[in-house]
Length: 457
Image (cartoon, rainbow, N blue to C red; front, top):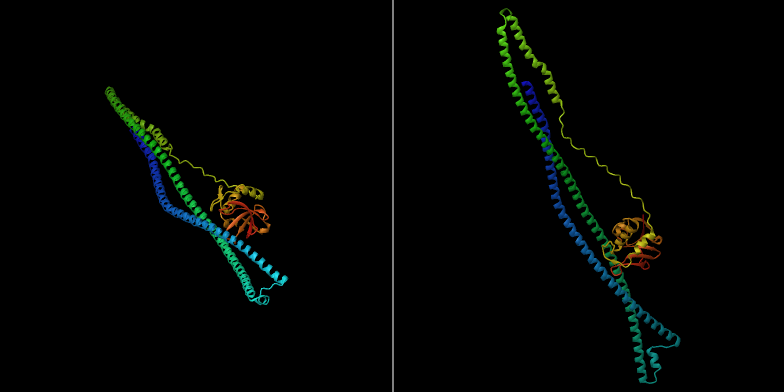
C-alpha cells in the first residue's frame, strides 16, 4: 500500500514538472523576441528622425525651386512686354520708312518726268535778278538739305529696325531659355517630391511590419501566459490531490496496522488451545499463513505498476502554436492596352479653354503647358505621359510635324531640352496652356513652328 502511495506522489511530481517547464521556456523566448522587436522599432524611430530631417531639407529644396520658378515666370512676363513694345516700335518705324520711301520715289519721278532739277547752277542761270538768284539758291539748299535729312532719317530708322529686330530675336531666345529652365526645374521638383514619397512610404512600411510582428509576438505571449496559468492551476489541483492521497494512505496504514494486531492476538489464543502433539503442524500452518498474507500485496503489484505505467504513458497536452496560413499573392493582371483616340483627346482638351496658366499646375482648375497635356491624356485615355516636357518626349514615337493628327503632341525646342508642348488639332491648329496672360487657348503654328511631334503609344 505504501508503495502505491509513493508511486502516485512521484507520478504527480513528474507530471507537474513536465507541464510547467516548456511553458516557462516558451514565454521567456517570446519575451526575448518582443524585446528584439522593440529594439528594431526604436532603431526605426531613430531612422525616422533622421529621415524627417532629410525630408525637411528636401521640402526646403522644393520651396527654393518654386521660388526660382516664380522668378522665371515673372521674367517671362517682363520679356513678353518688352518684346511686344519692340514689335510696336518696329511697326511704327516701318510706317515712317514706307512714307519716306514713297516721297523719295515721287521726287525721283518728278525729276525724270518734268525735268525738274534742284542744282544750284540751274537756280543761278534761271534767276531774273540777284535777289531772285539768292532766293533760288536758298530754296535749293533748303530742298537739298531736306532730302538729305530725309535720307538720313530713313537710314537711321532702317538701322533701328534691324537693331530692334535683333533685340526681339534675343528676347525670344531668352524666353525659350527661361521656358526650358522652368521645365527642368519642374522635372527636378517632381523627382524630389517622388523621393520624399518613397522615403516616407519605406519608413511607414518597415515600421508597420515591425509593429505587426510585435503584435503577433504579444498575442503569442498572451497565449503562453494563459497556458502557464492553466498549468499552474493544474499544479495546484495536483497538490491538493497529492495531499488527499497522503491522508488516505495514512488512514489505510492505521487500519491495516489495527487489523494486523487483532489477527495476531486471535492467532495466539488459538495456538494455546491446540494439543502439544499437533503444535509443530499448527506452527507450520501459522507460519505459512503470514507468508500468504505477505505475498498478497505482491499479487496486486502488477496492477499498481500497470496503473502507474498507464498514468505515465498518458500523453501530456502541450500548447501548439497556431499555424498562420501562408498568404497567397495574387498575380497582377496586366492592364489592357488602350488605343489613343485623337477626337477624345481634343474633346477633353477643349473642355478647359479659358482656364488659367499657372506654372507647375496640373489641373483641373489651372495648368502649365505640360501639366495640361498630362491631365488631358490621363482623363481622356487613362495614360500617364509624365508631368514635364522631357518625360512626355518619351511617351510615344517621333513623327514629322507635317504628319501630326488631332491628339498628337507638338514640342518646341531640342529633344531633351524642350520648353513647350501643345496638342495638335490637325493642320496648323493647336490647343495649349500658352502663357500666364492667355491661359488655355486655341492657337496656330503659323509663325510658331514646332520642332517635332510625338504620337503617344
